[in-house]
Image (cartoon, rainbow, N blue to C red; front, side):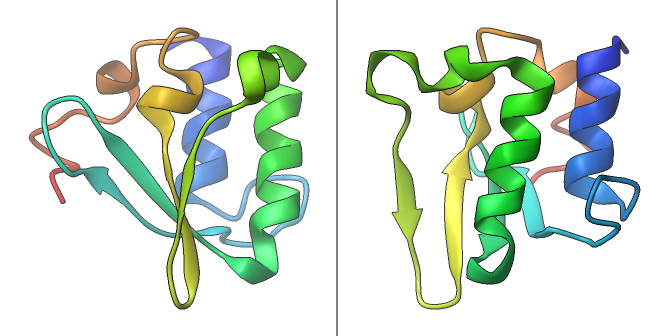
Length: 99
């Protein structure tokens, strides 16, 4: 796993990030082409800032990416947001992270 993959894993799965908090409440492959992360409204600003620090401001080029607003969370498809930067299945294997 490369450095970006490791940093993304730490951001999504641990408290080992700049905020020392578990920002992603849930993660998983919802189908073969979409890996989603559910982030509480409390952490969405910090999560996006960390994502930008890992992958650069280019993730917001071309108008950014879509997110699904839900009652308690924002659901982001990381394949859409950062899929061109790394192989998400290498970081989050489908057999382990199937939603």
